Image (cartoon, rainbow, N blue to C red; front, side, top):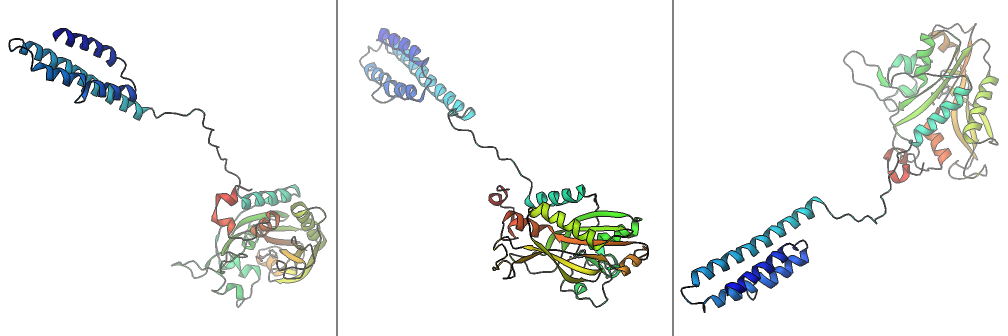
Length: 339
Ligand code: PHE
């Protein structure tokens, strides 16, 4: 029996070296370590061994069994460790696509618009979002009881020191800053965020972007204003665009006008988008009112100027075909990815 045990011990040594897979481990266990396995068979045979030899044989059997059990446990632990530290990699899997960010459609439109005015010789200027009544309204020739000052349109900022701090309702406030800080000639576009207390819908938001334009010099004419705006509209909306200027009213310009272009959807035939007029309004403009020039310290006898303002979101909707202005602010990547 001693001989048999020694043979088994040698066999075990060879098999232990091969315990590198789940399958080998299981085969080893079934062959040697279970109730009907080789080691248990020896335990049963031990009964027939003469009493005098029992201690020697028993000792050998124990050591062989201990070796088999230890080797099996160690190999199993090693295998488990390996599985944890190096998860199996399937090199044939296709690579996951790296998604690149894109410029937001509002910024892309803004950059395009500013680019057009830069080529026409306009500088770019900016002013603060939080303004006082003077820059936003009174210096722009708004009467004290003008409805735009009403709580319903304007967000007021709570302040200990002053009751007339507002979030600007238009970028025209930046015109005032330029005219009071610079000497003519002045030629600049002024992009920025504006705020109005309006119900959010598919067509309007309480916070949006405008670009203001201002040109002050000697002998500036309405014809120059039209030329500049037509150039701008053609660059943004296409060369064969149809447009019209319609008389309008703003307190800070005289005369005032609004510019319309043919409705992109019905091409002028009339539809829901253009309220069956065939036209879409794209901007407000006019010759700077003499009162505004005077308020800003510029002599209206010597200088004249024009101003215009338009909403960037509006242009973005018209040029991309997005039909709900709220989509521009939800930052849903499925929308943004398309631009
Ligand atoms: N500030 C006007 C608006 O918000 C637009 C405008 C700007 C009109 C400059 C005329 C001149 O509607």
